[in-house]
Image (cartoon, rainbow over all chains, first blue to last red; front, side, top):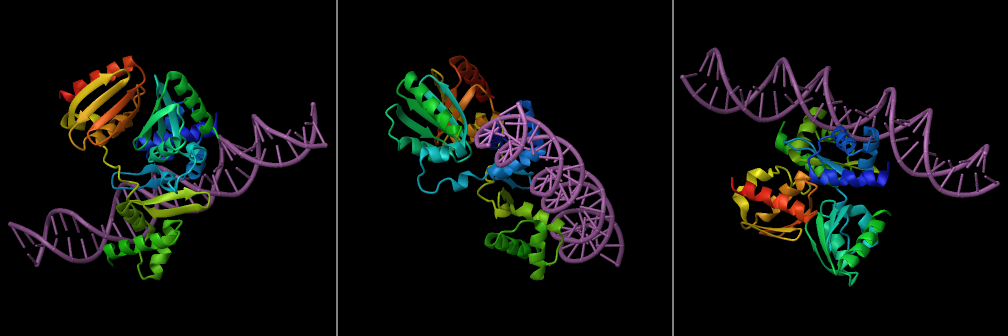
Length: 151
Length: 151
DNA sequence: TTGTTTAATGCATAAGTTCTCACTCAGTCA
DNA sequence: TGACTGAGTGAGAACTTATGCATTAAACAA
């Protein structure tokens, strides 16, 4: 049971669906085999600065990290761990999921490295598509990104 | 006793200083002659969508108009038929063409389903790129989307 | 190995927020 | 006029989140 991994899953869950309480989040995590108490989630939310936003439709949590992540251009290593959510690969492609609004800065940081293994990046709001030169190149890059994420 | 006036003052107070609880806010309002209970403030906060952001330094309220812009997310089934235009596939990819400005909401709706077959989506203005886990996954998704479109 | 330190966590409960209900008051209409 | 309606509110119950303290596990030094 790993704190980093858990916090990453929390970011992702919160980015992709409305969650109305820490207890609800706790259940979603439990379904994924991450069993912790609400106390721990309260502390995670603080670490991640996850905002709680009320509205007529109910309460919702939102990652507030993204807002403060775009100060100038940061190095990949400095922002990737904070913004990263998940990574998948298929063929020569890598799909990186990030917290809300995290895709743009990460893609920019990757681009600016000028790695020839990377043919290009396309970033949406919380998803980056990385097109690699070959499957071998894709493997190298994915490995490196995963290592970065673990920081 | 005027609600609008009070809510205006709340916005102002929250913008200009760190406020850590509704009780604290209540006192500040009382000093200004606006006497209400914390219950009322809770309702005001909801009306104004004032976010509560925790951090190692304590809790703080912030006007959250920007952060809460994603309320009222529609289900895929409810919007897809209206916005869909055309669909093509290649390898693990699906390219969905939509009516102008339709890509963003559809991509969001797809994301929020959390389907593991879908590694990620990237949306432009009227085109969505869907990256699937495999060609088989791509087939399943494409079939489903086409069925949805026929509604 | 043994002791020490530190991070992570659960438990119990304190602190804080939201909700339900009842009430008031102003406006509307027959 | 008198009944009705809806917005706004307070009081306290119900619910949610934060925190103090104790425990455990891991890393490290002696």
